[in-house]
Length: 162
Ligand code: MG
Image 1 (cartoon, rainbow, N blue to C red):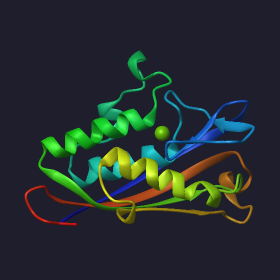
Image 2 (image 1 turned 60 degrees about the vertical axis):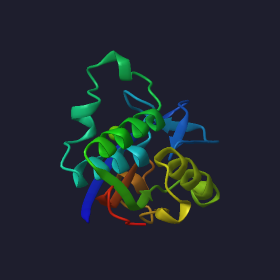
Image 3 (image 1 turned 30 degrees about the vertical axis):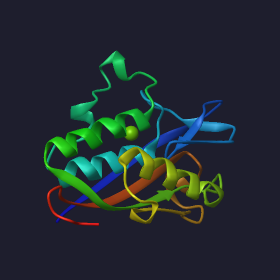
């Protein structure tokens, strides 16, 4: 069993789409980034790659490469899944915590878990997504940005781990 941890944060800006966990949220502001700015999937991919000692998303998907400009992070997550499989690992479970003052995340959590679990080919009961505010404190509290923490466990593909 191997444990991975990831963190990401992006700045909120007016008029951009807000995509979290592969789900488009109805909100008047979105996250600035080279890709779609999906902080949840970025933190998750760093956790998955970290658990397998395969570097981070900056190594695999450099923001200097135009190929990844505006790229869907769900597409990148499926690439990470293939990398893990090649390295002999399967995802055992995932736990993500979004840190956002607004919008309210709760109504979209089921859709996010569904999107992530189907992309990774695992059960929804292996994917946890939670959200918290910081009660107005810090950059997330001032609605300047959204952050996410993610942890995961991997196991060897040839062992029954789920
Ligand atoms: Mg990022």
